[in-house]
Image (cartoon, rainbow, N blue to C red):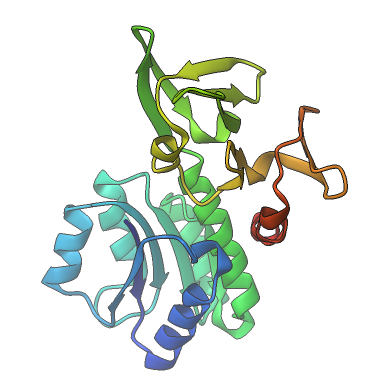
Length: 241
């Protein structure tokens, strides 16, 4: 579960932020929820303490009696994995954010606030969160933990229920699992280009629809691109560029 936690006391800004999140193409196939808080409450405190899933906090610095900076400090007391984005009406708070050492991803001034800026920052946040994801499995009595971002593509071995995972380094790992089971372990950066293949779209350098060829950034080439999946792949790649 991906959680967006908005801490903001102006309803129009809450709606603007919420609408910007909901329109992001990257989130189309993601299980996410938006939690809105217009003041400090016990519910917000419990949410911070009982961290579940992956969290992106969007905090207005000036909110009632408890500032967004104070909320950020509460978060960082036990949680250095969640993403924090600060927004404010006043540039003067930028130094406070820097000296607070809360490791925010961005500081957005409301007078320069726009959907494009926030959407771009959230896209960076999503990439940062998914980069830390791993899949684990056992193959031939060896335990593997593979970072999803290291995977180029996964190909089904013909006439078997096994698959080969090809990593960016060139290493190939045989897995005793069918493709449909492995697909459940992946996230939105992956796309099935063929009945026998799933690729990491973030690693794609070039597509040749006439040759049904996918070229990855490390020079690896495969010819596993079904005609009926070309349009979907093209749209999916756009989301990560």
